[in-house]
Image (cartoon, rainbow, N blue to C red; front, top):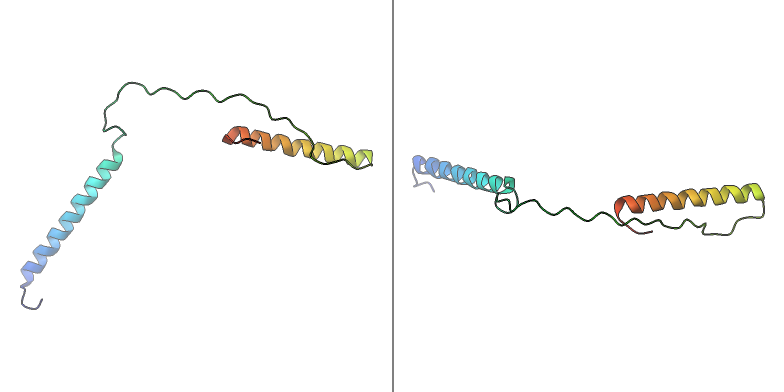
Length: 95
């Protein structure tokens, strides 16, 4: 490399920078284009509405003999099951 003049090094570097800038501009412009190459073939069909479903809420374990404790456990199980059902409905899963 010692026999190559500095102006060749400079021009080679400028060419490399120019090629990198052109490649970056091309990649960026391709990413910004809408799908389908910018052509619109009419309005896209809207997705079908989600199916209405209600997950049954059932306590999953037996309740203790103490009536106050049994009521609290049943209420807690019901709340947790309803929360799980709401989250599954919101995020599309099944419970």
